[in-house]
Length: 132
Image (cartoon, rainbow, N blue to C red; front, side, top):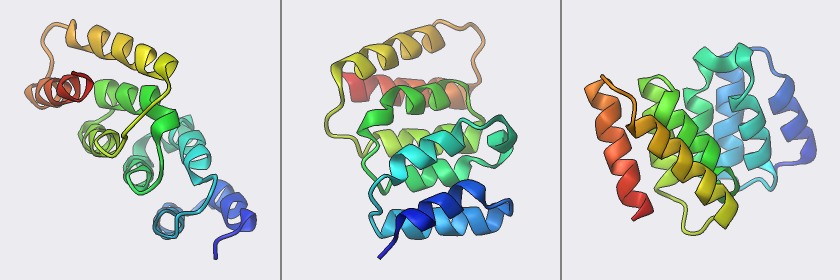
């Protein structure tokens, strides 16, 4: 069984491969509190280029408290991160109304940007369907 020590270790591991493997192991184990640790790691500027596996791990946990964060990643993350964030969002059944409102505002802002990459435009269209 995963423990709070595992969560602390996940936050402090410097090696990306070890961090990603631990995140996935903890996600598959259904570790309580993992969603908050993943959200914190995903938002760390020093991990911006290494966060796709962490976003992927969010797909295996209840990420309903992080809808706005995931929508922001679809809207502004690189292709791997944006795709992983959309997949995580597809697992959400219910979310807090305030978080959904923030997410819709992010989505509307992103869809209003001119000259979006075609892949991002496609992802945003798929995301909009989730909110319908």
